[in-house]
Image (spheres, rainbow, N blue to C red):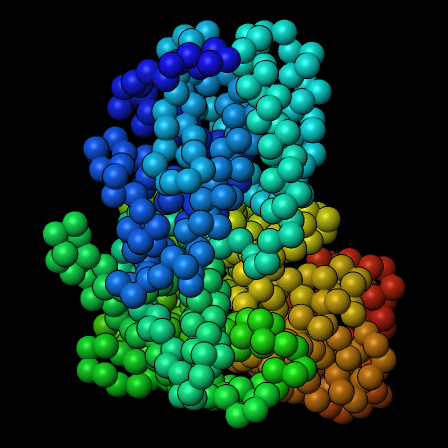
Length: 590
């Protein structure tokens, strides 16, 4: 069959596999990981001669983790994802793939792909991947409309296209314009499931069991299913853990590994009131290591938003850095230089903030990077380790050199290249840019990190600090307050941020209270914040006590106060306010 320059002939398996990898690696193929697995699964199964088995039921189990009770009529996840995949393939062939020889499509009415060959293209059109083909961090659906429109005008001027291929692309462009507009109206946010990082197989695996309905009726059942799905969607954004919905099995049905934890829960309705109970169970001995209740009034936010809010709270409590997943059973997991042991080592160091803990974590991460050069998380944490030598130099007894800062930024950039949507990688880049005197770059990376995983309390808290110290105190302090409310960070770390927020809005009494709630021994800069607050309040004797501590424990800070303040507070007026308090405490700032 021949139409518009396309031959319905059989392409070799090697050609199809090359084309599949080219699509998945392209910056123009902008779907999340689940959609990528969808495409890879249906192509692989078709090449293996199993296209007749590509039904919604099998795809739901293999790609979406649904169980044997999956009902395609009740759960349209496969149909919706297939529609998005078709549109993105159309977009790819309008842009990066406009000269490709092999065209992969998924015709409507089924899920089996078709592999077509462009008669006017030569086999050598399939060229090696370039750096520019790597995925970008943008995932904006609105870009599909403008990209399609731009492509039509570009192709009209591009006479290298064969007439048949031109009309094919023009027709596809019309489809993309219409489908992209429809896509903007779809309810729900894109999935952000992550690829399992090679070499990080010992990350704790958590199986999310469907929440039980403790009330009769279809509404309670629907809400329990909705909360379960929302929790999964939010948990998979945490790259430090692996989330599954069923026991991992191979093709023969054998269990590959046993999840370390199980997240269980229930939903109860009483009128408009919703109560959700959640618990994290260690599967080895059925010990409940965490449990909590969540209550909400569905009249306030509506059912979908209430579900999402409760799911976010549960996901944050379970998977947040320094949280229960990083405090339980660490002795049995840590102890080697595998990826997750180094993650635990990093969080242990950040909690202690000692020279010894810093060296242990740094050594572990350096060895892990050599063993697993594809692990974005490890590069991000190693970047933060080096950055700490710059920003916490008076605590770690290191030197704040430009070389240290440059290395931290290089590692952060590599982490982002490995995974452009990894919130921890973007957090590391934000901090490297901020201390590298690039506030615009810092806030751009911070916004991307927060968008990638707003339930990551470390991302929210650090982004809030950078917003605040860049002068956006209202926005930043709101995020810091939320992070403190969710027990973010090492004990007392974000409280000093709250002290600065109160200080800059002129509430010095609240500033002192927050400052004293922070961990004053965590970093000498915390003492400096309290010193400025006490000086502003005129509490000379208490200020002298803090000044004596700094002179005794961190004398190197005193001649560098102005420099350290300028590194943290971007606006001149904020710097002046802070230094004025220090001078009022009796210390002349050079």
